[in-house]
Amino acid sequence: MYEINLLHVFAVTRAFIPSMMERRRGSIVNMHSVEGMRGYPGDPVYGAMKAGAAHFTTSLAVTMGRHGIRVNGIGPDLTQTPQVDYLTGYEDHDDLWGSWAPVGRLGWPEDQARVALFLASDLSSFVTGHNIPVDGGTKAGGGWFYSPREGRFVNRPRHL
Image (cartoon, rainbow, N blue to C red):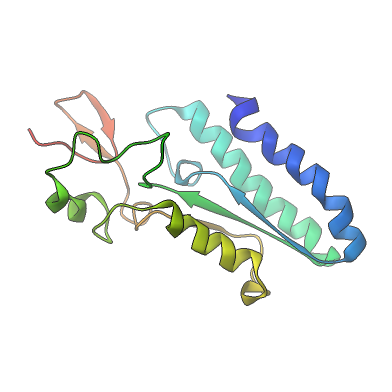
């Protein structure tokens, strides 16, 4: 769990920080998960690893700012990817996205990419130390619903 969800954040940062410090500029955008910014009843260890990445982001930003390096993070949720398929089995349930995500739709990798591009660019030159949930509002809305049918917490309820 550590190697997959946190170690790579440290390793990539360690590889790039020296050249950024030498140039006195740079922007690091860490990808973690919204699960690192809220309680995750499904897998607390996974949540802790993502929280570690988010807190590393915040702490590193404070350290690196005086070297001209900005550090921010993105916490995705409800984004369609090969790893997490939100469509299969729900083809006839587009009407439920309004209850699953405050913005009323599924997220796509492009949604994450746009925020990463903003954070990496000079458009965000005064932004550092933040972890932005790119989640359609699920963090703001709580994000988890208990499903008696499934006997567990889910991030999108199913029809009974």
